[in-house]
Image (cartoon, rainbow, N blue to C red; front, side):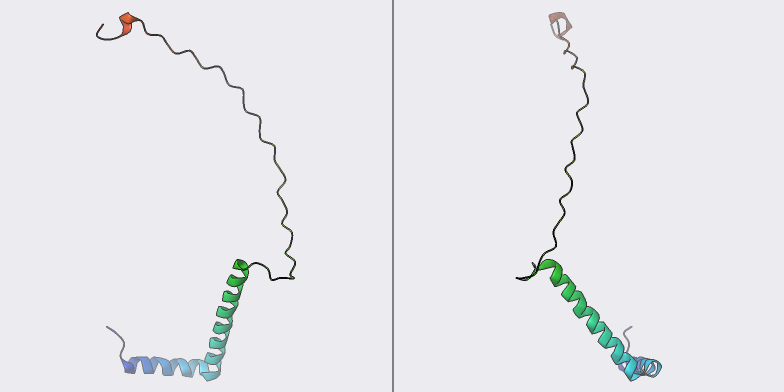
Amino acid sequence: MQPGIWQILIIALVVLVLFGRGRISEMMGDFGKGISSFKKGMSETQDPPAKGQIEPPVADPAPTAAPAPAPTAAPAPAPTLDKSDTPGA
């Protein structure tokens, strides 16, 4: 069931009485500022720095020494098959 025009008008009137016209416009202004700030922040992370701006240096991670490989035992030799061990012979 969808709300009719009268239900929407009653809800809008109650909201207007509770918050007042000034408070609603203030909230919408804050909402708009938040959206524009978000968009600005997103564009700053994607755009390279403007000409003349100094980009902060990026610290290189210290090189780490690779651990020495553990000594391994020599592989066991493969078993040899005699003619008598093969099936069908």
